[in-house]
Length: 156
Image (cartoon, rainbow, N blue to C red; front, side, top):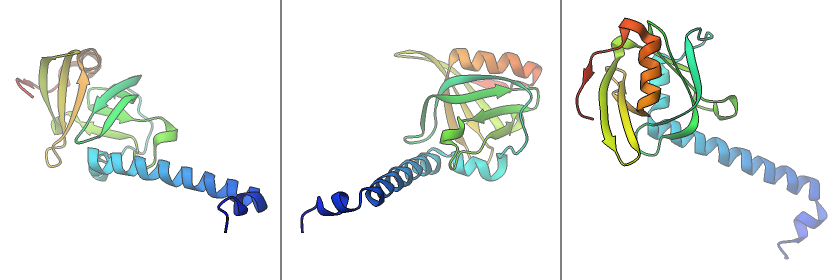
């Protein structure tokens, strides 16, 4: 049997199978990043179901555990109560918006790195999920949080 026989004789079914395969692969990739990076774990306690009214900035980058890399795909925000995290709607599978109260966050202040300064926010007193963001994003969050910004610790 020739491999080309099915696509030639059933082009619509073949197209549907290809689209389903692409969607399933995309969702599995998002699930792996959420599980490995820690987003899924954080969502058990910090899922935000209501709109966030604080100051936000999109197109931010961040890195969580393992290969939880969110390059230019985070919306970060803050208010006096806590930190807001979300991703664009297309990437929401297993990535619901999060709101982590400041009392559940430790700040480890900037270290020089090859490409600039970064700040590590450790999210969740129980979960301890690191979120590494650049210094300018951290400054925006600090300004938006006012006097609620957690006391910084030196080091990672």
